Length: 426
Ligand SMILES: [Fe+2]
Image (cartoon, rainbow, N blue to C red):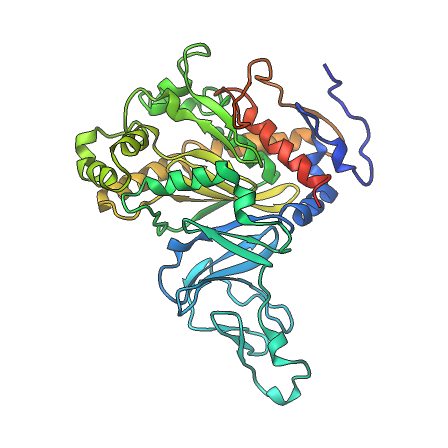
Protein backbone atom coordinates (compact mmCIF):
# COMPACT_ATOMS: atom_id res chain seq x y z
CA UNK A 1 0.00 0.00 0.00
CA UNK A 2 1.21 3.50 -0.79
CA UNK A 3 2.50 5.69 1.99
CA UNK A 4 -0.23 7.66 3.72
CA UNK A 5 1.82 10.81 3.83
CA UNK A 6 2.96 12.94 0.96
CA UNK A 7 5.53 15.14 2.66
CA UNK A 8 5.78 18.90 2.42
CA UNK A 9 3.44 20.90 0.26
CA UNK A 10 4.96 22.38 -2.85
CA UNK A 11 4.35 26.05 -3.61
CA UNK A 12 2.76 25.41 -6.96
CA UNK A 13 1.24 21.98 -7.09
CA UNK A 14 1.35 19.98 -10.28
CA UNK A 15 -2.28 18.94 -10.47
CA UNK A 16 -1.38 15.97 -12.64
CA UNK A 17 0.38 14.33 -9.68
CA UNK A 18 -2.50 14.57 -7.21
CA UNK A 19 -4.67 11.73 -8.42
CA UNK A 20 -3.96 8.08 -9.14
CA UNK A 21 -6.48 5.42 -10.17
CA UNK A 22 -7.37 4.81 -6.53
CA UNK A 23 -6.03 7.70 -4.43
CA UNK A 24 -6.42 11.46 -4.09
CA UNK A 25 -3.84 13.72 -2.49
CA UNK A 26 -5.54 15.80 0.23
CA UNK A 27 -4.13 18.99 -1.23
CA UNK A 28 -6.58 18.61 -4.12
CA UNK A 29 -9.17 19.79 -1.56
CA UNK A 30 -7.18 22.33 0.40
CA UNK A 31 -4.81 24.08 -1.99
CA UNK A 32 -5.83 27.59 -3.12
CA UNK A 33 -3.88 27.19 -6.36
CA UNK A 34 -5.75 24.00 -7.26
CA UNK A 35 -9.05 25.75 -6.55
CA UNK A 36 -8.10 28.71 -8.77
CA UNK A 37 -7.17 26.31 -11.56
CA UNK A 38 -10.48 24.45 -11.20
CA UNK A 39 -12.34 27.73 -11.65
CA UNK A 40 -10.65 28.07 -15.04
CA UNK A 41 -10.45 24.50 -16.31
CA UNK A 42 -13.76 23.17 -14.98
CA UNK A 43 -16.06 26.13 -14.28
CA UNK A 44 -14.96 28.48 -17.09
CA UNK A 45 -13.78 26.14 -19.84
CA UNK A 46 -16.45 23.49 -19.20
CA UNK A 47 -20.23 23.16 -19.10
CA UNK A 48 -21.87 24.07 -15.79
CA UNK A 49 -25.50 23.61 -14.73
CA UNK A 50 -27.25 26.96 -14.23
CA UNK A 51 -30.91 26.21 -13.49
CA UNK A 52 -34.14 24.74 -14.80
CA UNK A 53 -36.42 26.70 -17.12
CA UNK A 54 -39.47 25.82 -14.97
CA UNK A 55 -38.01 28.07 -12.25
CA UNK A 56 -38.74 31.12 -14.41
CA UNK A 57 -42.16 30.45 -16.03
CA UNK A 58 -43.14 34.08 -16.83
CA UNK A 59 -41.34 36.81 -18.81
CA UNK A 60 -39.11 38.78 -16.46
CA UNK A 61 -38.82 35.89 -13.97
CA UNK A 62 -35.21 35.39 -12.96
CA UNK A 63 -32.88 33.49 -10.65
CA UNK A 64 -29.34 34.51 -9.79
CA UNK A 65 -26.67 31.81 -9.86
CA UNK A 66 -22.92 31.43 -10.25
CA UNK A 67 -20.69 29.84 -12.85
CA UNK A 68 -17.82 28.94 -10.58
CA UNK A 69 -17.40 32.27 -8.76
CA UNK A 70 -18.90 34.44 -11.51
CA UNK A 71 -22.44 35.71 -10.82
CA UNK A 72 -25.01 35.23 -13.57
CA UNK A 73 -28.69 35.89 -14.10
CA UNK A 74 -30.99 33.31 -15.72
CA UNK A 75 -33.99 35.31 -16.94
CA UNK A 76 -36.95 34.71 -19.24
CA UNK A 77 -37.26 37.27 -22.01
CA UNK A 78 -40.56 38.63 -23.37
CA UNK A 79 -40.31 36.25 -26.32
CA UNK A 80 -39.92 33.34 -23.84
CA UNK A 81 -36.21 32.86 -24.57
CA UNK A 82 -34.21 31.88 -21.50
CA UNK A 83 -31.16 34.17 -21.31
CA UNK A 84 -28.08 33.63 -19.17
CA UNK A 85 -26.36 36.98 -18.61
CA UNK A 86 -23.43 38.18 -16.53
CA UNK A 87 -24.77 39.75 -13.33
CA UNK A 88 -22.31 42.59 -13.80
CA UNK A 89 -22.86 46.08 -15.15
CA UNK A 90 -20.90 46.57 -18.37
CA UNK A 91 -19.82 50.00 -17.09
CA UNK A 92 -18.17 49.62 -13.68
CA UNK A 93 -18.96 46.05 -12.78
CA UNK A 94 -21.67 46.32 -10.11
CA UNK A 95 -24.01 43.32 -9.69
CA UNK A 96 -27.43 44.22 -11.07
CA UNK A 97 -29.65 41.78 -9.18
CA UNK A 98 -29.15 40.87 -5.54
CA UNK A 99 -32.15 38.60 -4.87
CA UNK A 100 -31.91 34.87 -5.53
CA UNK A 101 -35.27 34.89 -7.31
CA UNK A 102 -37.71 37.51 -8.56
CA UNK A 103 -39.29 39.26 -11.54
CA UNK A 104 -37.82 42.27 -13.34
CA UNK A 105 -39.08 44.50 -16.16
CA UNK A 106 -35.54 45.77 -16.74
CA UNK A 107 -32.11 45.43 -15.16
CA UNK A 108 -30.96 48.75 -13.68
CA UNK A 109 -27.55 49.36 -12.10
CA UNK A 110 -27.67 51.16 -8.74
CA UNK A 111 -24.35 52.97 -9.30
CA UNK A 112 -24.85 55.24 -12.33
CA UNK A 113 -28.31 54.25 -13.49
CA UNK A 114 -27.39 52.31 -16.63
CA UNK A 115 -30.37 50.11 -17.48
CA UNK A 116 -30.46 46.87 -19.48
CA UNK A 117 -33.26 44.93 -21.12
CA UNK A 118 -34.10 41.30 -20.38
CA UNK A 119 -31.81 40.32 -23.27
CA UNK A 120 -28.88 42.20 -21.71
CA UNK A 121 -28.86 45.03 -24.26
CA UNK A 122 -28.23 48.52 -22.88
CA UNK A 123 -31.52 50.44 -22.87
CA UNK A 124 -30.42 53.76 -21.49
CA UNK A 125 -28.20 55.74 -19.17
CA UNK A 126 -28.19 59.20 -17.58
CA UNK A 127 -26.25 61.90 -19.47
CA UNK A 128 -25.44 59.79 -22.56
CA UNK A 129 -23.47 62.62 -24.20
CA UNK A 130 -20.29 61.50 -22.44
CA UNK A 131 -20.42 57.89 -23.67
CA UNK A 132 -17.11 57.38 -25.45
CA UNK A 133 -17.46 53.76 -26.58
CA UNK A 134 -19.94 52.22 -29.01
CA UNK A 135 -23.33 51.67 -27.43
CA UNK A 136 -23.42 48.17 -28.92
CA UNK A 137 -20.36 47.32 -26.83
CA UNK A 138 -22.25 48.08 -23.65
CA UNK A 139 -24.43 44.97 -23.48
CA UNK A 140 -24.10 42.59 -20.56
CA UNK A 141 -21.59 39.82 -21.10
CA UNK A 142 -22.93 36.37 -21.88
CA UNK A 143 -21.37 32.93 -21.53
CA UNK A 144 -19.78 31.76 -24.78
CA UNK A 145 -22.39 28.99 -25.01
CA UNK A 146 -25.76 28.36 -23.37
CA UNK A 147 -27.83 25.24 -24.07
CA UNK A 148 -30.80 23.41 -22.65
CA UNK A 149 -31.90 19.78 -22.40
CA UNK A 150 -35.42 19.01 -21.13
CA UNK A 151 -35.44 22.39 -19.34
CA UNK A 152 -32.02 21.87 -17.70
CA UNK A 153 -30.03 24.98 -18.65
CA UNK A 154 -26.25 24.79 -18.87
CA UNK A 155 -23.64 27.40 -19.75
CA UNK A 156 -20.02 27.32 -20.83
CA UNK A 157 -18.28 30.63 -20.20
CA UNK A 158 -15.32 30.16 -22.53
CA UNK A 159 -17.42 28.93 -25.45
CA UNK A 160 -14.74 26.33 -26.17
CA UNK A 161 -16.19 23.24 -24.45
CA UNK A 162 -17.77 21.63 -27.51
CA UNK A 163 -21.46 20.79 -27.54
CA UNK A 164 -23.60 20.19 -24.45
CA UNK A 165 -24.50 16.85 -26.00
CA UNK A 166 -20.83 15.87 -25.94
CA UNK A 167 -20.46 17.00 -22.34
CA UNK A 168 -23.50 15.04 -21.20
CA UNK A 169 -22.84 12.00 -23.35
CA UNK A 170 -25.47 9.27 -23.70
CA UNK A 171 -25.28 8.62 -19.94
CA UNK A 172 -25.92 12.22 -18.87
CA UNK A 173 -28.74 12.64 -21.37
CA UNK A 174 -30.38 9.43 -20.18
CA UNK A 175 -30.26 10.66 -16.57
CA UNK A 176 -31.86 14.03 -17.38
CA UNK A 177 -34.51 12.32 -19.53
CA UNK A 178 -35.21 9.82 -16.79
CA UNK A 179 -35.81 12.55 -14.17
CA UNK A 180 -38.06 14.47 -16.57
CA UNK A 181 -40.00 11.39 -17.70
CA UNK A 182 -41.14 10.77 -14.16
CA UNK A 183 -43.62 13.59 -14.74
CA UNK A 184 -46.81 12.51 -16.53
CA UNK A 185 -46.35 15.54 -18.81
CA UNK A 186 -42.60 15.00 -19.18
CA UNK A 187 -41.39 18.05 -17.29
CA UNK A 188 -40.18 19.11 -13.90
CA UNK A 189 -41.76 22.07 -12.14
CA UNK A 190 -39.14 23.41 -9.76
CA UNK A 191 -41.21 26.07 -8.05
CA UNK A 192 -40.49 25.43 -4.37
CA UNK A 193 -37.37 27.62 -4.12
CA UNK A 194 -33.91 26.57 -3.02
CA UNK A 195 -32.31 26.23 0.37
CA UNK A 196 -28.55 26.73 0.55
CA UNK A 197 -26.18 25.55 3.26
CA UNK A 198 -22.69 27.00 3.38
CA UNK A 199 -20.22 24.47 4.68
CA UNK A 200 -16.50 24.63 5.51
CA UNK A 201 -15.38 22.01 3.05
CA UNK A 202 -14.22 21.72 -0.53
CA UNK A 203 -16.88 21.42 -3.26
CA UNK A 204 -15.59 18.03 -4.41
CA UNK A 205 -16.39 16.44 -1.06
CA UNK A 206 -20.07 17.08 -1.84
CA UNK A 207 -19.80 15.56 -5.29
CA UNK A 208 -18.28 12.52 -3.57
CA UNK A 209 -20.49 12.16 -0.52
CA UNK A 210 -23.70 12.71 -2.50
CA UNK A 211 -22.62 9.68 -4.57
CA UNK A 212 -21.18 7.52 -1.80
CA UNK A 213 -23.22 4.40 -1.16
CA UNK A 214 -20.94 3.10 1.59
CA UNK A 215 -21.68 5.56 4.41
CA UNK A 216 -25.44 5.20 4.73
CA UNK A 217 -25.38 2.62 7.51
CA UNK A 218 -22.81 4.47 9.58
CA UNK A 219 -23.01 8.24 9.09
CA UNK A 220 -26.80 8.25 8.65
CA UNK A 221 -27.55 5.66 11.34
CA UNK A 222 -30.05 7.96 13.06
CA UNK A 223 -32.27 7.97 9.97
CA UNK A 224 -32.62 4.20 9.97
CA UNK A 225 -33.42 4.23 13.66
CA UNK A 226 -36.30 6.65 13.08
CA UNK A 227 -37.46 5.34 9.69
CA UNK A 228 -36.71 1.61 9.77
CA UNK A 229 -38.93 0.77 6.80
CA UNK A 230 -37.57 3.17 4.17
CA UNK A 231 -36.72 1.99 0.67
CA UNK A 232 -33.03 2.06 1.58
CA UNK A 233 -33.44 -0.73 4.08
CA UNK A 234 -33.64 -3.39 1.38
CA UNK A 235 -31.46 -1.41 -1.02
CA UNK A 236 -28.34 -0.95 1.07
CA UNK A 237 -28.81 -2.07 4.67
CA UNK A 238 -29.52 -5.75 4.21
CA UNK A 239 -25.90 -6.92 4.33
CA UNK A 240 -23.02 -6.80 1.88
CA UNK A 241 -23.75 -10.07 0.13
CA UNK A 242 -27.53 -9.63 0.02
CA UNK A 243 -28.10 -6.13 -1.34
CA UNK A 244 -28.75 -5.76 -5.04
CA UNK A 245 -28.19 -2.00 -5.34
CA UNK A 246 -25.23 -1.01 -7.49
CA UNK A 247 -22.94 1.88 -8.43
CA UNK A 248 -22.31 3.04 -11.98
CA UNK A 249 -19.71 5.26 -13.63
CA UNK A 250 -21.27 6.52 -16.86
CA UNK A 251 -18.11 8.30 -17.96
CA UNK A 252 -17.35 12.04 -18.41
CA UNK A 253 -17.62 12.46 -14.62
CA UNK A 254 -21.31 11.51 -14.52
CA UNK A 255 -21.74 8.88 -11.82
CA UNK A 256 -24.63 7.12 -10.20
CA UNK A 257 -25.97 5.09 -7.29
CA UNK A 258 -28.59 2.60 -8.44
CA UNK A 259 -30.55 2.18 -5.22
CA UNK A 260 -33.59 1.19 -7.23
CA UNK A 261 -32.09 -2.20 -8.07
CA UNK A 262 -32.44 -3.04 -4.40
CA UNK A 263 -35.97 -1.79 -3.80
CA UNK A 264 -38.39 -4.47 -2.66
CA UNK A 265 -41.54 -2.92 -4.13
CA UNK A 266 -42.85 -0.48 -6.72
CA UNK A 267 -43.16 3.15 -5.58
CA UNK A 268 -40.85 2.46 -2.62
CA UNK A 269 -39.21 5.80 -3.47
CA UNK A 270 -42.48 7.65 -2.88
CA UNK A 271 -43.42 5.60 0.16
CA UNK A 272 -47.04 5.06 -0.86
CA UNK A 273 -49.03 2.11 -2.21
CA UNK A 274 -50.05 2.29 -5.85
CA UNK A 275 -53.74 2.85 -5.15
CA UNK A 276 -52.93 6.15 -3.42
CA UNK A 277 -51.49 7.57 -6.66
CA UNK A 278 -53.52 5.68 -9.26
CA UNK A 279 -54.24 8.85 -11.29
CA UNK A 280 -50.51 9.48 -11.52
CA UNK A 281 -49.79 5.92 -12.61
CA UNK A 282 -52.44 6.02 -15.31
CA UNK A 283 -51.23 9.36 -16.64
CA UNK A 284 -47.67 8.05 -16.76
CA UNK A 285 -48.74 4.95 -18.69
CA UNK A 286 -50.63 7.22 -21.08
CA UNK A 287 -47.51 9.26 -21.86
CA UNK A 288 -44.65 6.78 -21.93
CA UNK A 289 -46.41 3.44 -22.43
CA UNK A 290 -47.01 0.64 -19.96
CA UNK A 291 -43.55 -0.93 -20.12
CA UNK A 292 -41.55 2.26 -19.39
CA UNK A 293 -44.15 3.44 -16.88
CA UNK A 294 -43.87 0.22 -14.85
CA UNK A 295 -40.09 0.60 -14.94
CA UNK A 296 -40.27 4.23 -13.78
CA UNK A 297 -42.71 3.35 -11.01
CA UNK A 298 -40.14 0.87 -9.73
CA UNK A 299 -37.05 3.04 -10.23
CA UNK A 300 -38.30 6.42 -9.10
CA UNK A 301 -35.92 9.29 -9.86
CA UNK A 302 -32.18 8.86 -10.50
CA UNK A 303 -29.47 9.34 -7.89
CA UNK A 304 -26.62 10.76 -9.92
CA UNK A 305 -24.10 13.54 -10.36
CA UNK A 306 -24.00 15.44 -13.63
CA UNK A 307 -20.42 16.70 -13.59
CA UNK A 308 -19.47 19.06 -12.07
CA UNK A 309 -22.24 20.73 -10.08
CA UNK A 310 -25.67 19.15 -10.58
CA UNK A 311 -26.82 16.43 -8.20
CA UNK A 312 -29.96 14.55 -9.20
CA UNK A 313 -30.68 13.44 -5.64
CA UNK A 314 -33.79 11.34 -6.13
CA UNK A 315 -36.66 13.55 -4.91
CA UNK A 316 -34.26 16.49 -4.61
CA UNK A 317 -32.08 18.41 -6.98
CA UNK A 318 -28.91 20.04 -5.70
CA UNK A 319 -26.38 22.55 -7.01
CA UNK A 320 -22.86 22.44 -5.64
CA UNK A 321 -21.45 25.99 -5.58
CA UNK A 322 -17.69 26.34 -5.03
CA UNK A 323 -16.84 29.37 -2.88
CA UNK A 324 -13.20 28.79 -1.92
CA UNK A 325 -10.92 25.79 -1.45
CA UNK A 326 -12.49 25.25 1.96
CA UNK A 327 -15.99 26.72 1.45
CA UNK A 328 -18.97 25.40 -0.50
CA UNK A 329 -22.68 26.14 -0.70
CA UNK A 330 -24.92 23.11 -1.24
CA UNK A 331 -28.28 24.33 -2.61
CA UNK A 332 -31.26 22.01 -2.89
CA UNK A 333 -34.85 22.05 -4.03
CA UNK A 334 -37.49 19.30 -4.12
CA UNK A 335 -37.93 17.55 -7.45
CA UNK A 336 -41.50 18.71 -8.04
CA UNK A 337 -43.21 17.30 -11.11
CA UNK A 338 -45.47 19.09 -13.57
CA UNK A 339 -48.85 17.50 -14.23
CA UNK A 340 -49.38 15.77 -10.88
CA UNK A 341 -51.93 16.39 -8.11
CA UNK A 342 -50.93 18.99 -5.49
CA UNK A 343 -50.90 16.24 -2.85
CA UNK A 344 -48.21 14.38 -4.83
CA UNK A 345 -45.85 17.35 -4.84
CA UNK A 346 -46.66 18.12 -1.20
CA UNK A 347 -45.47 14.64 -0.35
CA UNK A 348 -42.24 15.25 -2.28
CA UNK A 349 -41.76 18.55 -0.44
CA UNK A 350 -42.24 16.89 2.97
CA UNK A 351 -39.72 14.17 2.02
CA UNK A 352 -37.29 16.84 0.93
CA UNK A 353 -37.63 18.72 4.21
CA UNK A 354 -37.00 15.53 6.16
CA UNK A 355 -33.92 14.53 4.20
CA UNK A 356 -32.25 17.82 3.36
CA UNK A 357 -31.82 21.19 4.99
CA UNK A 358 -30.23 22.16 8.30
CA UNK A 359 -32.82 20.21 10.32
CA UNK A 360 -32.97 17.24 7.94
CA UNK A 361 -31.76 13.71 8.45
CA UNK A 362 -29.06 13.57 5.79
CA UNK A 363 -27.26 16.81 4.94
CA UNK A 364 -26.20 17.82 8.46
CA UNK A 365 -24.51 14.40 8.81
CA UNK A 366 -22.80 14.78 5.43
CA UNK A 367 -21.73 18.34 6.30
CA UNK A 368 -20.12 17.12 9.53
CA UNK A 369 -18.15 14.43 7.70
CA UNK A 370 -17.08 16.83 4.93
CA UNK A 371 -15.94 19.50 7.38
CA UNK A 372 -13.96 16.92 9.35
CA UNK A 373 -12.31 15.68 6.14
CA UNK A 374 -11.31 19.26 5.33
CA UNK A 375 -9.77 19.62 8.79
CA UNK A 376 -8.07 16.24 8.57
CA UNK A 377 -6.31 17.05 5.32
CA UNK A 378 -4.93 20.22 6.91
CA UNK A 379 -2.50 21.97 4.63
CA UNK A 380 0.31 19.66 3.70
CA UNK A 381 -0.62 16.06 3.74
CA UNK A 382 -2.74 12.99 3.70
CA UNK A 383 -3.90 10.72 0.94
CA UNK A 384 -7.48 9.58 0.49
CA UNK A 385 -8.04 5.97 -0.50
CA UNK A 386 -10.75 5.31 -3.10
CA UNK A 387 -9.86 1.74 -4.00
CA UNK A 388 -12.90 0.04 -2.50
CA UNK A 389 -14.40 -2.42 -4.97
CA UNK A 390 -11.62 -2.41 -7.56
CA UNK A 391 -11.47 -6.16 -6.85
CA UNK A 392 -15.00 -6.67 -8.16
CA UNK A 393 -15.94 -3.86 -10.56
CA UNK A 394 -17.20 -4.83 -14.00
CA UNK A 395 -16.90 -2.88 -17.25
CA UNK A 396 -20.06 -3.22 -19.34
CA UNK A 397 -20.19 -3.26 -23.14
CA UNK A 398 -20.94 0.49 -23.34
CA UNK A 399 -17.94 1.30 -21.11
CA UNK A 400 -19.91 1.89 -17.90
CA UNK A 401 -18.13 0.61 -14.79
CA UNK A 402 -20.51 -1.10 -12.41
CA UNK A 403 -20.12 -2.50 -8.90
CA UNK A 404 -21.62 -3.08 -5.47
CA UNK A 405 -23.54 -0.13 -4.00
CA UNK A 406 -20.86 0.33 -1.37
CA UNK A 407 -17.99 0.44 -3.86
CA UNK A 408 -16.16 3.67 -4.67
CA UNK A 409 -16.85 3.53 -8.39
CA UNK A 410 -18.55 6.97 -8.42
CA UNK A 411 -15.61 8.56 -6.62
CA UNK A 412 -13.12 7.03 -9.02
CA UNK A 413 -15.26 8.09 -12.01
CA UNK A 414 -15.48 11.67 -10.73
CA UNK A 415 -11.75 11.93 -10.13
CA UNK A 416 -10.84 10.27 -13.42
CA UNK A 417 -12.69 13.04 -15.25
CA UNK A 418 -11.32 15.72 -12.93
CA UNK A 419 -7.78 14.54 -13.64
CA UNK A 420 -8.48 14.59 -17.38
CA UNK A 421 -9.78 18.16 -17.28
CA UNK A 422 -7.05 19.40 -14.95
CA UNK A 423 -4.22 18.01 -17.03
CA UNK A 424 -4.38 17.35 -20.75
CA UNK A 425 -7.75 18.80 -21.69
CA UNK A 426 -7.26 21.88 -23.84
FE1 LIG B 1 -24.82 11.09 3.08
